[in-house]
Length: 344
Image (cartoon, rainbow, N blue to C red; front, side):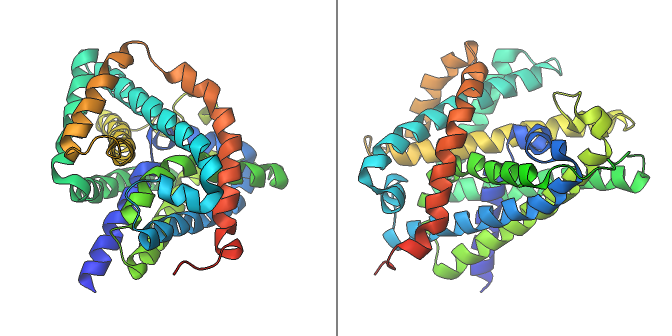
């Protein structure tokens, strides 16, 4: 039982670490999908996280039943072999592009504190590579250590802000249908990287562990999101003006909190880069039967030069396209238990 709980906790942390990237941790993702719709967002957030939880469970359970070695086996079960070819390319491009952006973002974040840009990129890449010496267990252990720290800091900062009672909360509720559509878009937006990584993770779990991991990740992310979004609503007059809305909560905080904020943002970048690389390794090992650390080294070696060009603008252009395609994938994932015969 203890082993089941331990494995479930590690996987739940991995799911949260994959989802809480730099966009989420900075508050920008929550603000765009929820906070900007006013108080109605607090009603639609639970819907988004329920869909998120169900999706995670379906993906992991399919990975477990099929003993998936890489995500295409799960994709084929959900959308068929023809569409799998399309989504395979989309996932590869998405993971490669966002990993490059994460490395570039880490360099920029550390440069703010006087660390040379290239040194910041190199150090982050080195820390990412070290995780894969221990293969899957190394990835899960990393997230089980870092994600609770990250969540505790964000939740603590938001609770302190709300306790101080300095927020000016919007009086109007906003359009509920629009807020609901945005909540569903939030889930679809985050589903692509989860398919890539949870398909493989599910193969190493039993049925109870997949269920508990999905529930724990959904509940943990829901609590954080509801508190974080409520704090952003209180800071709404200022949050909309910041590229990093989290800064709107830290205006009256001490310098120590700002240092903590920088660390949390870097951790969010780091855990996302690790998760993305995990999905890439599982996919590329189909072509290269080499140890995880060697595949990771080759991938990082190819990606590092690309950080000089920056892929942020390219990703921003592609996100609307990914949003539409992900919505189709999300629909099929949610409908899969109702439309398919149980696997033997």
